Length: 583
Image (cartoon, rainbow, N blue to C red):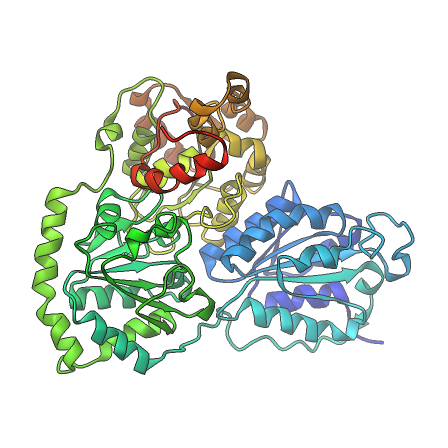
């Protein structure tokens, strides 16, 4: 029979779907993939340190590129290692295809090595909890059908994780290459728009003057930043974003309030939680814990709430809206902007534009952007993280793509880093909050946009989780790839709560002050250490000038995070469950 073997068919199909990189770990059950990967031009195999790192790199690649990411590994421990990374993609609806090479079908349930069958690790069952779609190849001739189903989900308006299981004894089966790639190399974006409901929502909004837009991740998925800006400017409506949409409305824009919620700006938090707000329009956010100030009743009280989201399941989830509209974010803003000035609701909103301008000027004159602004210029020893992030911001190019990991450093970075570029700030604290993600995810993003200065801000606890993946950046000689370790010698957030712990329990939050710069050097990464605040700027400039992969170990102190308002609503409740009395 003429044709090509199944593994080559799969790789060629992915190349035809515009896949440029596959993040992988070699192994016996994927040897055939390895052989074919190096023979097909235009698609690169990126060998990672762990399968978890490979999955996280595929996630970061997908977020930065707008394409789907691909990771590859063996079944058994390879598959289980992928789960944490893929669960992040699943939670945030990031399109990632996971391919596992599995034992031959004839070995199943016979105590074979890394058995993925019902008597082994049950790979299909393992993935069932995080995969939006998955298929196990039992007949090589069904490969196109299975791939099409996976690609369809990956490129859908509501994507997620797809899993393809390929047993070893089918990998060498030859089949004709008849794969037909989808028409578009970009993920499809639905233009679903409910014009009648949107008109009703605009009419409702026009009855109020002090209105604010709160923008979530749906704006990024819809690629709707330009339409959002046009709408906000037309009607002079201030804009706040959630953490996951940070920068999708430029934070230096005259209408920007910055981030609302955990680590949010003072002006956004104080404004959205005040009684002075008449109308809140929420677009592309389900208003989960972090984006709603821990489900605070104050965010809903004494105002009209309009919610617009493509995913109907996100509507009325946290609060009952006065009107909830199922619509794509970009299509909604384009619809509003296309309406004539003569439309009654449009005319009323335009008439009240000056009121909002005066209101915003008053807000800016009375409420600062940052909490604890003085810490941005702190000369404290050990270094204050606010100073570190502020100096980093002033040293890096405006179009730096920044990945922020999870820990105490998250709040300092999100609060003091200002970004003007859509889809250039990334974090996952919204749902999964997995420590270490930013290290491999930023590497994946760097492969997607090699010309961008790429920075990952992580903690020492994050380095313990996924720090080995810096060797992947070194292995592929990535330029202007910078890892910033805010090293406070602790699991920061638990440590900040230790006032209610016993002395012995508090000691569990300590971390040895490792020499992370030395660790980096041992893996081929340029390592730098900063111990004094006056050294920060020159070190950042040296890292840029090096034009290579650099890790900077910043010896920080453990200082309270700028989360004052969120602490009032979150920590008060959280402390009840860990046995700490409210202080």
